[in-house]
Image (cartoon, rainbow, N blue to C red; front, side):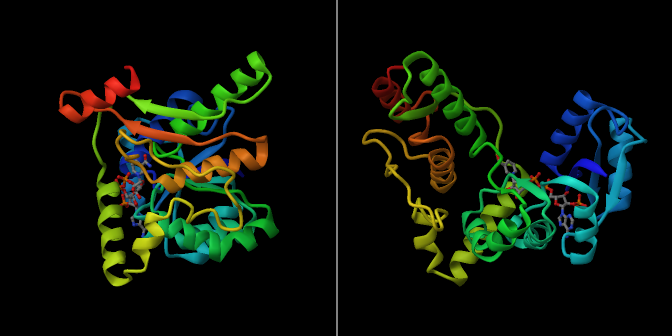
Length: 271
Ligand SMILES: NC(=O)c1ccc[n+]([C@@H]2O[C@H](COP(=O)([O-])OP(=O)(O)OC[C@H]3O[C@@H](n4cnc5c(N)ncnc54)[C@H](OP(=O)(O)O)[C@@H]3O)[C@@H](O)[C@H]2O)c1
């Protein structure tokens, strides 16, 4: 039995995660029991050779193999999936985790797909106790942890939570990975097929299925819009409100460098 299985270990982000786990916990004989999984035995072997870690446990399973995914779930407490685009490959694993009570996380930003997963699999996940956590990527984690740290600090210092938290990014490195580009292209394709999706994607509360947000999140006048799916931030806000009381909206505002817009934003933000 493993603590964590990284499904999609050969992906761009999977490789980063696997290297991190290896550096921190070593291969299977460390404190954490973990394994890598993917659809191609040869690519998993090549990854192990590249990492210099031949003893790392591997599981070969395709994202469409429902029975294989159930076996994968039976072998672990948590599955981390980096197999994307999630709208094309992700549902059978979410279904298997929801059915078997296996905890799951991913780093999707495909809002239309997340909504579908909530509508189709939330009931089974609630019944089995599986925790299905989407959006564990750049879209949510900095704001998630940022809000949590700030609100804890505020409670400690002032005995009450901050009314509002805003995340501002002064600079950012890197670009979109291959999987991210493929996911975006797939969203465009889906919207072309089903124009009603446009409204869903534009609604920051489309993921608040069955939960009423306490406060409306809106971009401040004069600031750039959030570069990341607003739904992910709203979901976070709702989760925090439900679990920890009145923790308010987190907005991500990207401040680039050089151009007029960024200079104006920096003036407004006092940076
Ligand atoms: N939120 C964020 O911050 C963030 C950042 C980066 C990426 N992402 C998302 O993360 C996902 C992965 O991105 P990436 O750039 O790392 O992807 P990638 O490098 O293109 O890798 C895709 C992975 O999916 C696997 N895969 C494809 N079809 C499969 C199938 N039928 N069965 C099993 N595995 C299959 C591939 O396996 P093979 O190697 O065998 O082909 C590969 O491991 C994307 O959805 C992307 O949008 C999110």
